[in-house]
Structure formats: C-alpha cells, structure tokens
Amino acid sequence: MLAAQLRNAELQAYIHRLMDEGRLPVILPEKIAAGYGSGSNCRGCDQPVTPTQIEYDIEDHSNGSVRLTLHRGCYVLWQIECVRRIHKRDQGSLPIDAIPHAW
Ligand SMILES: [Zn+2]
Image (tube, rainbow, N blue to C red; front, side, top):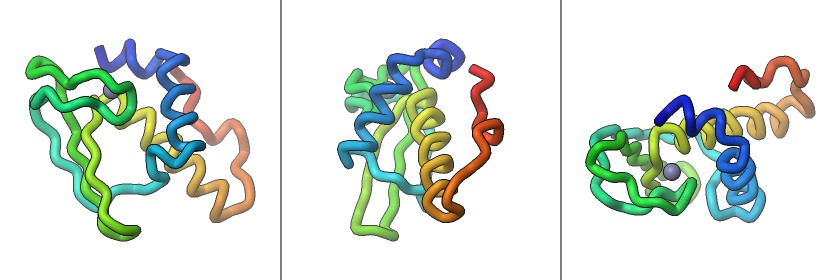
C-alpha cells in the first residue's frame, strides 16, 4: 500500500495541485500523530483512511491553525513536496538531483 502510493504519479500530481491551489499547506508540521485509520477522509486523496491503514494526524499552529488527516503514503508525498518547495523558496533553487525521485 505505501510503496504503491509512493509510486503513484497521478496521486503525486494531485497532491501537488492541491498545494498549488492552497488546499494543502506548505508546512513542516509541529505535531504528527500516527495510528490506525478512523474512517476520516484523507486530505491528500479524498479517500477514507480505513482501520486497516495507517493514518497521520497533523497539527500545526505556526501559521494559523492547521489540522489534517492523511494516509501514510499521501503524507510522505506531501512532505517531500513541502521540503522541496520550502528549499526552493529559501534558497532560490535546488539542484534537480537533490530531489528524491527513486520511486
Ligand atoms: Zn490519501
């Protein structure tokens, strides 16, 4: 499930679009709780996180109040892109080979 999500280019593109549109914030969250899914909808893919899946609950208060629920795979894809965008913003640009593209 995790590996499949990380290799899912469509999901990756969808998460990037949510970030472009401001529907997912560009943050490195202060607080993360992981557990089994509660059935809440994932903010990355809009599908429920079922009790057999790992759910990540994100809390961040550095820029208003943010609470998000994400699948583990969606969380990883989102955070990789957050790191990339924050680096880009802070340093102008990042060498393309510094971005993990292994999947
Ligand atoms: Zn998801």
